[in-house]
Image (cartoon, rainbow, N blue to C red; front, side, top):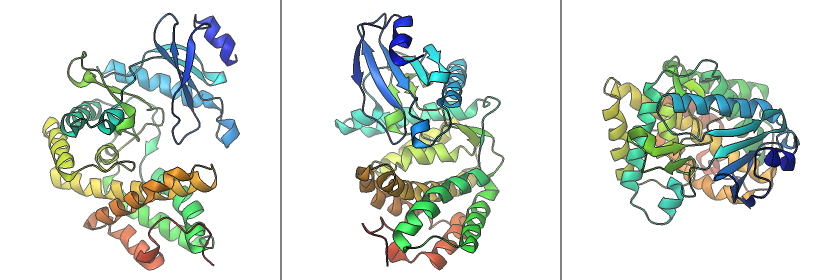
Length: 336
């Protein structure tokens, strides 16, 4: 079913459609007003156009995870109607403000990050749903290679990595992450302010709405705390990071803090390297050069993570293959 018949079938034919700012992915969003209730349309029909599989699996994952989050007492958008084969989803509108927009408007970050951390702790305390894909060593090595080796490396070094370099990189990531496999937690994978909404009328951990969770997996919970507090798109003051980390750990007193700190460094190193290189792919493949503005932040955060002994395998690989002077956005033209 195409967009107009889908909206008509569910009473939204006359609703005004306001396009919302897009993200780095293929999905687009419309805010619908004047229909039976405030709603958002998620349109993933462009998946095939950017070389991704059908949006059907993507949307079915969203529906299943939304149900899981609601089932453990957290706030995810209610699914009003769905046509997964067409890539169309009609969702409850949780509001116009996000934590990101509030921060941009000058809101005090301490309470926002504290609430986000407490909701994240509740999410991680609950057993994850069955069927989530693994977000651990092999998957993380593969996704890092898909940006760092396939896009950043040729742009910065002027050549493709050799098979031996690819294998050395895979081994470095796998060795770094191996001590932290098997944690088995729900991992949102993009738990940061743009995907969180304030819902002050809801109690406790439900006071933070959660969106954009369709890529969730199971892995180490430190990954989500890195996403939140070592944000690739905004600077988070150290005092805010410390405060929110304490709120998270206080809500999960059984955690071994030293082991969690080591896991945080390893997850941060993988994420920051992968995302720093992702900005290059978005520029060169997708025509979105504005994302390169976040590159320097990601490289700084990577350098911070590499100071922890838990990241030694990746630090050694980079020291051998990527001089510090090149750990940045590549030049506009590939190196000679």
